[in-house]
Length: 77
Image: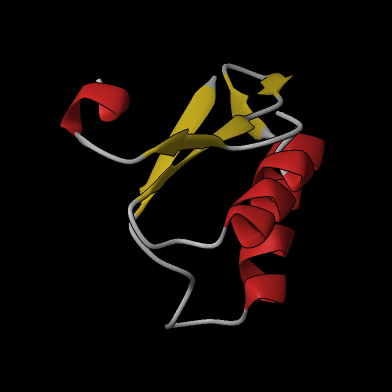
């Protein structure tokens, strides 16, 4: 079970700490399906103007170490 987060900028609705905590919760506590608990890994794709450092924090908390960077449509594909 995975989440793919594609972002075109840093978090503006909540704090960076809130986003990191949400990714960490998904990975550490997971989701329960059919009585089984599955860790949810969070993959982060930074597109255009987002901060690589902030995106890496979210990815690390979500169990995927670091984010991916895409500067254009080809890189996003």
